Amino acid sequence: MKANPKGRGIVEWQRGWGVVLAAALGIAIGSIYSHFIGAMIPHLQKAYDWSRGEIAFGLTLIMGINLVASIVAGGLADRFGMRPIALCGVWLFAIGFSLLGLAGPQLWTWYAACVVFAMLAASVSAVIWTGGIVKWFEAQRGMALALTLTSGGLMVAITPSIIVALLGLVGVSWIFPVVGVTGAILMFIPTLRYFRDLDSVGSGAGVSVAPKQLPGYSFREAVVRRHFWQMLAAFVLVALAAGTYLVHIQPMLIDSGFSPAQAASMAFFVGPSMIVGRLTMGMLYDLFDPRFVSAVAFGLIPVAGFLLLHLDGNYPLAIGASILAGLCLGAEVDAVAYLISRYFGLKAYGLMYAVLGGAYGVATAVGSTFAGFGFDRFGTYDQWLLILMVGGGVAIMLVLTLGLPTKAQSEAVGSTQDASVNAGRCEANECGSY
Figure 1: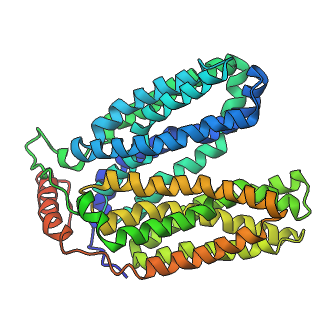
Figure 2: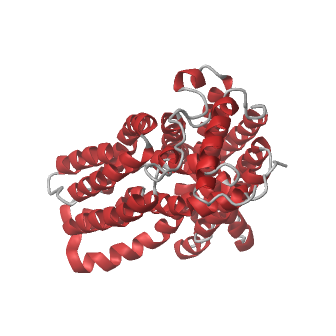
Figure 3: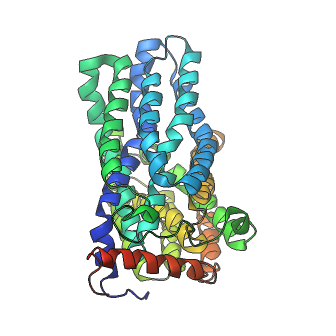
């Protein structure tokens, strides 16, 4: 079990709760586009006579371009700080999301709006908000990340209700500007008030300012280490399963003999389970060896796959499979952000998260696509589920053989930073007892 210095976690929450609040809103609103566009597909289809596939391809464009744009945003954040990127990014998000409402009736205008939005929205992607969290939290980093990322799951639950309420008031075209501008305001206020880079704390108030240099490896140093490639492979393998479970669980339930209504009722358990999985993993990361916690998270993949393979119309079994799939989806996202911060430090966190987290996102989309093609070819998901189960086992071995997070470089820089930050906090009478 990890050492947890007395009072360290309490001080972190006293100083960093506002950062978590701002980051949670940023994650929830900044990532709303995926499920928002999905829920809008029938309405866009009716308004402009586009096919569902044509509309959905716009989302594919967004995800692909957002990967590259996030790498740029992450590099800029590493250089200039997370706060200035976030403060500008919330308004870029508003502009980009509003442009989606100007599309139509020509299909090319939809694709053009999606491309522009993808480039602008990268400035409020998860790389920015999780970057702020990992800089502020050390002893309670896992739980802070979990609470931040959980907000995305909550937004998934309320998005359909938002759409229903607004469509009747403003219509298909204006719903995008209304949500974009409102979302930007909701992100901007707490970001301006609370979301600050750690090295700016106390500036101008007679408090010591931590040095700009952050602990950890540069991107070039990280990519030559085996840990980078092991994590990349592990994240891709678990993301293939995540994409499959997220998109295809309802079709799987229907194929096993349940009605669409019954399948929807059982799939309801996925959302709450995602939240439970995310919070549980965050707590465990703060207490235990990250290799073993990650192995437990990735171990949910073959167990869920086994249950999905044996769906036979049994209601309790189907609920169990839905819950396990949700736990799996929630736990894996925590693993990406936490392992990057622990094994590579904070020096190039933005770029590292953009690359590894982006690979996870792309693999999620690829997993759902392969599952669909596999079903079209064989008339069943069984073969693909078996592949995912084996991939989950390989991912477990990859994280178990990472070794303990290295402290050789990060401690040398990090200890100096911690000393400055703690000194500043004590001068401001905010440090308490350690």
